[in-house]
Image (tube, rainbow, N blue to C red; front, top):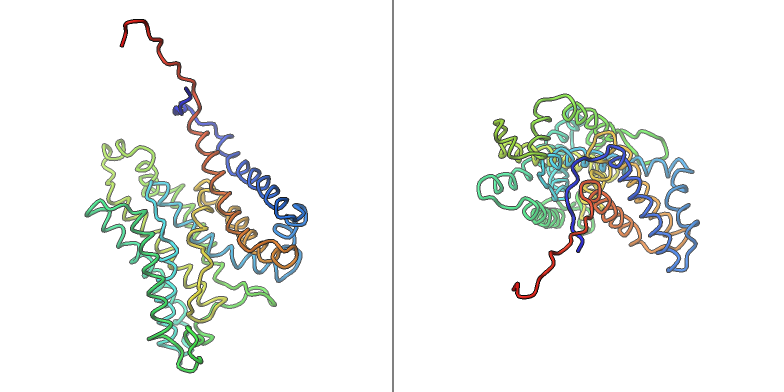
Length: 360
């Protein structure tokens, strides 16, 4: 009989190889999938991973999607290191978009330089407040934060639907479910001419630096890490578990809310029913693929953004189904978790004790 038993030591090299192995296995599985679909794997991989980087517009789109993925994943990773499982970043992103968009619409007749900073603050606080609901339920009633944050995402989506079809709908918008366009003062400046990438990317880069300092150089970051790796030791040392829950969820919610500001004040320029293509969920994969390390998450976010953009391009150039992007993301997560499991556990053959006659 085979049984998983914990390893006494974890190899650093093995931990580094986990994301690389997961990517390799995903590519192999993808090649099989494309072959079964009657498509050339080489053509499909070119469309996914090379074609987006051959034009200025494609590079801009990759950077545009890297921003929110990087920002959200950095926030989630801090909580994940403490074993605080925030699965509702998608809803927190929507609340950030709603709060910042409401301010942009309320002050749509002003050109104040403080409008955009005010939107960033409002969106960040709204995302954190939405995550705080899960933190309060977890610390007060021991509610599972995985279920609570996930269900809150559905509520956030319905709230967005209500607002863009009711109170915030553009009265001159021919009944389309969207708000009026934001004024220039409520929008991020473009970074590369001819593309949609904008200065909201700086928010993600600053967040990465802050996350690295917090994780690697701060006492609160160390406490969060200890709370996740050794909860009993953390309690013995006086590290409050409830404080770790609050901190992990609030940081993740704030990062997701800020990403929501980047979407509505960036490529969209308004509130509408479809704000995010699933950044909040994809960022979970990015956080794990990056090894929950701020530097690794940079490369993982870029790779995931490449899958997003490449998926759209392969739909046109190769005829790959649009669902292939989601399949790639799912395979990445499954293979990563499988590889990660064998870094911390190993299979051991357990020999059942022999039975003797009369021993029942």
